[in-house]
Length: 185
Image 1 (tube, helix red, strand yellow):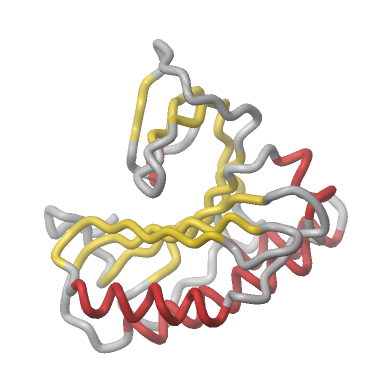
Image 2 (cartoon, rainbow, N blue to C red):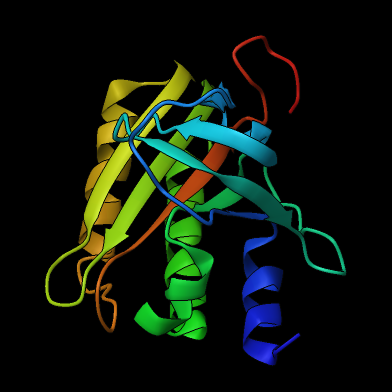
């Protein structure tokens, strides 16, 4: 495996990749839960409402995923741009740096909160303008805290760019490592 790809996998831990994107419905199983993306499924994106179909594959680094120090964690990075096109649109080291910067910022913002839930942040990177960033969530999370995260992410990622065309990915965070039922994921 090329070194740049290995570096990206080591950084993000777990990444789901898609081969085809479409807005039509199919007979595939559908899910809105990023943690359930593996195999032939339709992902109904909670950030923009679009349906993405594909044979989803999850990748993990050989050494395992590095656990966050606190109760909040980046559970998954979901790549919504066809994997083969990503390297044409952005250097993998650059993408890994963007992900690392955003991960650190969001985890810092979540430090010390008592709420539980899930936060999904979608980044649409573009070549000549600010990225489009959307945030969705589940659980009992404070709206003011979520607005602060949205503002900080928008501010810190204003210079994120691609070489050409767009690149879309999501960062899926667990807040206090619990889902809506209070069970660890």
